[in-house]
Image 1 (tube, rainbow, N blue to C red):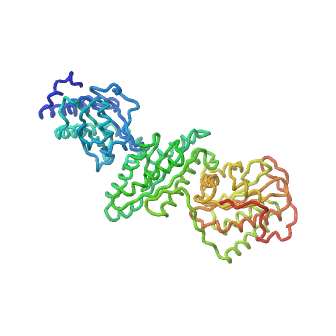
Image 2 (spheres, helix red, strand yellow):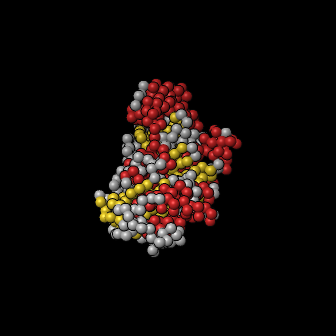
Image 3 (tube, rainbow, N blue to C red):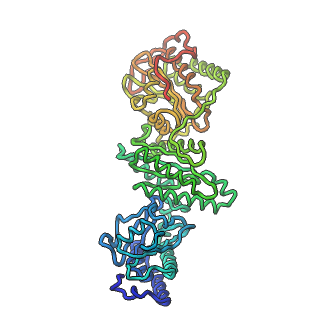
Length: 560
């Protein structure tokens, strides 16, 4: 109500009148069954209970870092509307607005109070108001939103009595919201983390799949992953309540950062892992966001810290065949960067790093050579059979996760013609290998160089960006590969993949290159391509010295 419509505004309410107004509010709230009906009612009743010139009801969106105004009532400024569609405020601009249950409390201030904050002073001036009160609305264990009320200069400033009445009013309002939201509880739990109020893993997966449903991305997509260092120690030493509070502190900080980037999504993926999804940002802007998150480490309680890593793409990573595979690849790249940051120490953000590789013994190398050579000698004399035997035997010797043999005719695409189908591979239905994958080698410089007779090594940390995205799309952690041209106008590539259970493969790249050379040189001739798969022609005699592992390819440089 406005001042001229309600005479009680000018004189305030007595204690009995306050109690009657609160009782009426509780009765009216109990009759409402839908949030769209509750929103305008709450704003109108707040005018009476809080003796305000204007009132607003806002919803906190912690995953986006904003406070969204749902309803305004009373004497509004020219730019305000009763039911706004785009009136939002960044949480980061209002330091007195708490987003955690532990810190949430009512507060009031006016234009003469410097502690109110410049952003709030500016808002009061734009509204034409002198003082205001802000009251958190609690629903269960989360801050649902805020009830704000403002007074013009002819009214007395807000007082502790207004705060007390406002707390009761918001308690009644929170109970009504909780009752209404219970009907949609399953949907809310499906997309939000109950402890922190952020989005959850499903919310991130669905957003990524929606973004990757575009054939060509309209703007960049970036993921910043954050791991809470020390959560287990906090749980063990101070109890799980302290651990839950720490997680809410991290979520509140992510909410503040998310509010600086329109369209972002902050989420808790599970346990101590959090995520910030960003769209349309440059690499430097993503790094800035990661640095903002890492800076939170200095403010977290109980000595906890954050490790943070990120990945960014402007196209489908690694020729992933489906939106699900593309989403998974981007997550794996960010996870690898986060793991590097965690190894680097508390409170660090990273994009790439180089792993040290421990060399194997000469005896192990010799044993691997002999085993693989026996397998190649026992295979049929076609190139494909020999390379298939090579891949299977070498992957077994190196405890690798998978091997792939691919072939290219002329300047055509590189096609997968053989790979390990064992249980160890754990391939998803939309895995690239299930589609008899084809890639354009020109999009993968190190792969193209290897096809000419060279080799490549890449991990989730090391290698050209294009090769690492392909590795992420295939769902592995490391790759070594070597190529060789055949007797006709074709080229072969053997790739050996490692996962978390595999020893490091990088030290074996020279061995793989020599074995591929030997296998191709000693094979029989190859026929023309037919139906996209090379016709294999038996025959031919092994070339002298084909088993010498010292032989190397013709030209080409290792991909690093």
